[in-house]
Every structure is written in structure tokens, then in C-alpha cells.
Amino acid sequence: MAEPTDDQLREYAVKLPQIYKDILCAFPKFAPDRIRFEPLLESTLIGEVLDADESHRTSLIEEALKTLTFQNLLSTNQDYPGYGGGYGDGGGGGRPAPQPIRYWPTETGERLIEILSGHKAKKVSLPALPKPTWS
Picture 1: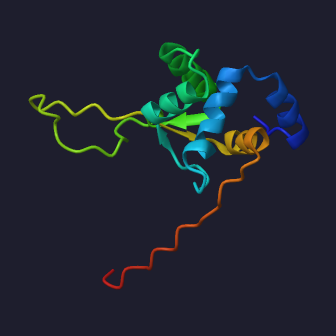
Picture 2 (picture 1 turned 180 degrees about the vertical axis):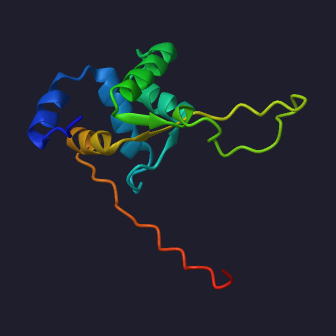
């Protein structure tokens, strides 16, 4: 699928229902100094969206997050089995502990957030890992 132009994204942003705008704008609102593609926990996003508009319902925010993911505006660790960053069995007798759900913007999502919020996330690069000297 081709990336939308900036004009197409601006046109799309005007049509977005408020709940989606509130979710996308929660990223820079919660972390104004955030870097591109930095995730937020689902619980953090829900809290920020409820702070923006108490009339939203948690179940609708959860559904809207899934819709944004389906539309490739957000990604989630639920897309990557085994990812989650937790340890241990959660006291469940050998079962893995449930992992908190994280969402992060895709490239298109980042561009849309910038259009909606006027906030441009910082780009940072991970330094190159030196080649091991023992191989």
C-alpha cells in the first residue's frame, strides 16, 4: 500500500471522529519530548483520552485502538507473539504472565499525529553495535 501524501493526510485528519483524534494526540500530550515510534501502554492511552473527554467510554477507546491498528496507523505488541518485555510466570504455575498492551504509531500514524497536534516527534538513531572482536 502506498504512503499517503501530506495533503491526503490533512484531508483525512479533518474527517476523523474526535475519539481517534484524542487517541492520536495522546502520544505527544503524555510525552511532549517523545521520540518517533515510542510506545505507550494501553492504560496510559485510555487515561489520556478520558482526560481529554470524559464522555468517551473505555470499551470504545479499546475498540478505537484496534481500529487504528487495523488501519495501520498504530502497531501493537499484540501483533508480535512473545513480545512484551515481561518476566516470570506471573505466579500462574508455569503460564506466562500477561503482558501489558503497548501501542506505537506507524510511519503514517506519526505523520498524522504531527498534522493533528502540530508536534513533531524527535528522530533518534540507535548507535551501531561494534563487531565483536572474539569472532
